[in-house]
Amino acid sequence: MTSPTFPAFVVSEEKGSQKIQREIQQKTFNDLPPGDVLIEVQYSSLNYKDALSANGNRGVTKHYPHTPGIDAAGVVVESSVPAWQPGDEVICSGYDLGMNTDGGFARYIRVPHSWVVPKPVNMSLLESMQLGTAGFTAALCVLALESNGVKPENGPILITGATGGVGTIALQILAGLGYKVVAVSGKSEARDFLQSFGADEVIDRVSFLANKEKGLLPATWAGVVDTVGGDILATAIKGTGFDGVVTSCGNAASGDLPLNVYPFILRGVHLVGIYAANCPMEKRLLVWSKLSKEWKLERLDALCRRIRLRDLDGEITQMLAGKSKGRCVVQLGD
Ligand SMILES: NC(=O)c1ccc[n+]([C@@H]2O[C@H](COP(=O)([O-])OP(=O)(O)OC[C@H]3O[C@@H](n4cnc5c(N)ncnc54)[C@H](OP(=O)(O)O)[C@@H]3O)[C@@H](O)[C@H]2O)c1
Image (cartoon, rainbow, N blue to C red):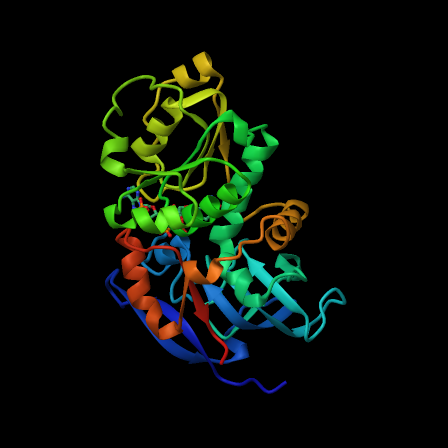
């Protein structure tokens, strides 16, 4: 196939300095990395990890120039393996996509076949990216709570970084399953927004941290979805009840965990780590299936803005400043 030129959002380092530049460039198939499957991307989405990659974070992306985008949904154009055929509608998220392999902020990606999953029947390509890695991660947290025995009657679930992508989707899934959900947010103006998506209570970040120096706090939470780490995660663990389950997936505030062992040895609190990128395929398919069926969200449109490649620069700046709310889908197609 003759290679068309196509737009890609490229992050580069200015020569001789570590200053980052972001611009839209025209590329061809020859510029793409090797792989079995060429996909025409219809939608991608903006995740916190993309913002880090687009900001020169070497923990995410080692070499520039680079095209971020850990999420992509689109249509197979070429495949050298029988499992995927031209015309198949697919999702590719996680693994090395958008980290050190050029990612979904471009009209085309080329990836190994083992990274590709079929789009669930009961979900559109757009819906798959309205969820994206943030939604997939939120679902992994819910799965971890459920599989560790947390039931709605056990007590409330705390969600931190609640207005973010992971937080808002976890909130909706849990509220839909009948859990009482308490949201912690740094955005005082977001109370109505969070309540409209199912939060029973909203606690502002400063009040939540008022007793952060204490070793243990009243046993309140049956489960926690933490997206921010640091003092907030430590405070959440100290306030978790007997046999409660805390899922830790993010570090939007900090990668540290300032904590003693008392919640674990006096209350049997379980701390469960969540890592979406290398989630095994069997679990990956289960989670996408649940998101398309019993955990299907009816109000994704209200949660997501649709943007173009040209809007990414501003959205990334907002996200890094902790100011984003909900999800941002990047539309690559017409
Ligand atoms: N483990 C995994 O596999 C995995 C997968 C996806 C995402 N993540 C991680 O999960 C986290 C959330 O991702 P996301 O896509 O939801 O990001 P996001 O949309 O940017 O949301 C993060 C939220 O965290 C809160 N926040 C930001 N800065 C903060 C600070 N300094 N102190 C306390 N809270 C702060 C804000 O919510 P409020 O204003 O409402 O408090 C913000 O909206 C990120 O760290 C991301 O890297 C991990």
